[in-house]
Image (tube, rainbow over all chains, first blue to last red; front, side, top):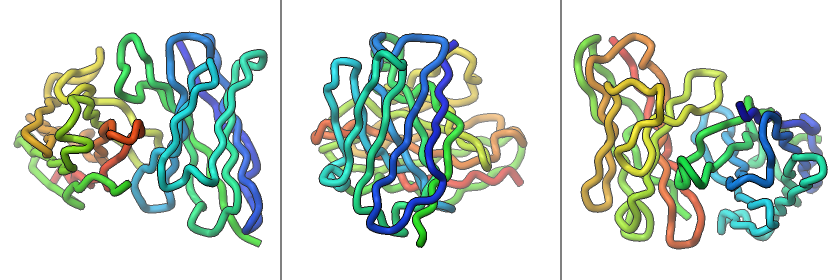
Length: 121
Length: 110
């Protein structure tokens, strides 16, 4: 069974770059899935950040596109998020999630446990 | 992109049915049958409950059902149980080749 695990610094300075990695276990990142990042500010709703296919094709939230880069490392079976020029508004729990193109092509069927990132000096 | 519109809260007694609405535009909810619903308990990751408007993944109770009319999708939970108390989020594909979530609805089982 596929599992996702986020990792990265829990504290990032304002104007810095937030960097997170999502490790995929129990399956291949090169299978027919899109891999997404979703975030949730404390006490607020979910916000989709972007997604990547193993080929490197990406789609991003238009409101975040200028600051977001999502990449894939097939050799390590993981994908990553970089969010630049962060402010306190980027403080959130960050989740990675899977979109199974075969069974659930238009939904997120597997989620990581989430990792809290705080932007503060 | 703007979040889909959901009621902030709904409530119901055990055994009753409730419906949560999710309103978007013709560029998202109304334009595609790609609406999904997620259940989130406090401190936990979201769980997929409904996909493609009205389909349930294996293992999800048939007390959960989804529908759509125009730019509004709905999630109905019948036979409310205490464990249904959670936050619920809708999501839709958009014409910008992106995904958008609703603001979330807190369900209270009285």
